[in-house]
Image (tube, rainbow, N blue to C red):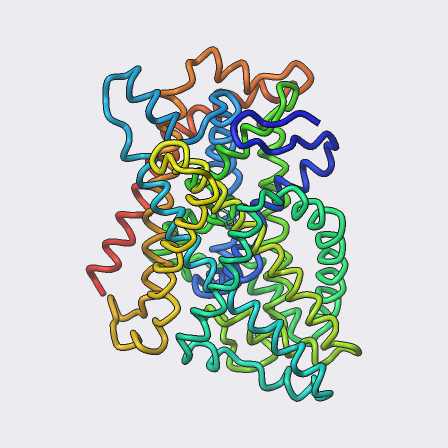
Amino acid sequence: MPNNKFTGKILWRNRFAFYLLAVGSACGLGNIWRFPYVAGENGGGAFILLYLLLAFTVGVSILIAELMLGKKSEASLLKITHRVSTTHKKPYFWISRLTLFITLVILSYYSVISGWVLHYITQFVVGFFRGDTLHYISSLNMKVLTDNGWLQFALASVHLIVAGLIVGQRITNRFEKILTTFIIPVFVFLFAMLLVRSLSLDSTPEVLRFIFYPDFSKLNLRSLGHAIGHVFFTLSIGVGALVTFGSYFKAEDHLPKVGFRVMMVDVMISLFSVLLVFPIAFSIGEKPLTDPSLLFEALPRLFMKIQFGALFGLGFFICLWAAALNASVGLLETLASNYSERYLKSDRKNSIWLITVITLGFTIIPAFSGSALKDVKLFDQTLLENIDSFLINYLLPISGLGMAFLFFKALPLADQKDLFLDEKTESSYALINYWQAILKFAAPILIAAGIILQIIALVRG
Ligand code: PFF
């Protein structure tokens, strides 16, 4: 198997495995944990429709552009901006610096949430050995975690160190193979089984109305920005990971098709996640739909209703953690390959550990936001909520736009056409103009509108 020039990663020959890998980098906590409560927070159906429209236009267009940037340049983001700045005699470094800063903060924030998943795994195991799993399931709640900053910090550290070991020991390939051959199939099975059980609850008709009947009066000034931010987060746009990933593809791979399929699978998983979580949340009564604890509060209640529920619960959270670990490995790999190439100039292993330690430093803020830092509030929100909102709803869309800008600067029109048009895919000829128009006009306008509307909402209070 040939090596990739840029990262030294082994290229996978098997197409199916390749797709699983691409999908694996997009699917994670964003779909299963974040999407349900963000959709709940924004009123359900109308927001989901907005999210779908944005995923099928702006989202997939930038996703494809980022993949192309990586494939054509075969270089890290920092190198690409360096080249572009030299050719155009203008400094465009802000794009890669902003992007890599966002990547670092997302990794720290993502590690804290992954730590929550780890906590649930440990609780299932403890319950199993004590022989009273049902009691454990019913007493699992988020308060134990949010009140305890040290516990969150310790769990996030474990998560980050495991990610660091995988990237540092260069066993990413082995980990991905385990993921694609074992974890993903098990996850699909468990997910499908739980989905069927959840949809058999009495609350399902009400949930279906909430999800599929768009009530536009429920949208507010923040909704557009929230939808764009979430589309970018869930598709891993604007963090440089897709640029790295694009460089793995071979000449004969048609990237628009790859991008479209990745987006489709990602969107489907998000929709299934809403269908999994909402029926349980609706049947609880007080409908805690808008809280980040939604997934963690809802699922254990479903496991209690199922035979061998504790075992299935353990399996589900292990798979979820593996998916989160995969996403974190992607983020760390991106940071490591960029920084070790340009700044750190030391060997790769050292730079990985240095980045891991810096990221750990950043995790302190979200980890302690519910305990030692709970009185530090901005705009009436905790620091964790502020990081989530500022990072995902403001910075990520700006950096995604930076990527589109870089794409046009780095790739001449002939290259763009060459990569987009495919004789075997007739629709590519019809779609190329739309794609370019979305990148050049629709994306900047929508992103600017999303940000301005959110600022107005903030000022109004
Ligand atoms: N797309 C991932 C998710 O939905 O969980 C989050 C993520 C992973 C964002 C990797 C960015 C990234 F580079």
